[in-house]
Image 1 (cartoon, rainbow, N blue to C red):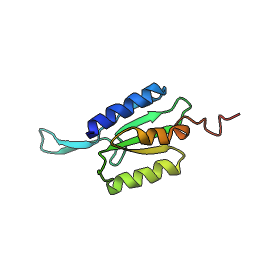
Image 2: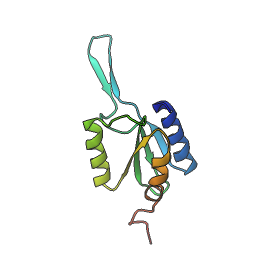
Image 3: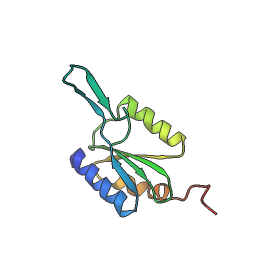
Image 4: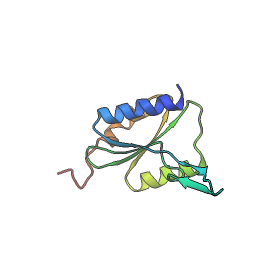
Amino acid sequence: MSEGHVIKACIDWLCLHQCDIIRNNTGAYKAESGHYIRYGKKGSGDILALSPFGRWVEVEAKTRDGQLRPEQLERMALVRSKGGVYVVARGNIDALEQYKSEILAKPLWQAV
């Protein structure tokens, strides 16, 4: 499955579970002035989402043998250290299913 197909499947899964999603692109382009203009946050996931209970979720889509870049590994550590969920979806949505209880969990400040 291509990375684009993985992204589409993940977006469908997140929407099915009432997450608010943003398709996130990062990169740069050369402006007419000759300067490069960067967009997006380097290392951030392909999909940014807010779960129905307010949990931050990032999904990085990869093919089955795709490797995470160092800035993606740093971003994963940052998101997880702050209580968010960072998922690496390799070739399908199995990783989302694996993290489903985390993604859809009520945060401790809401669990009453």
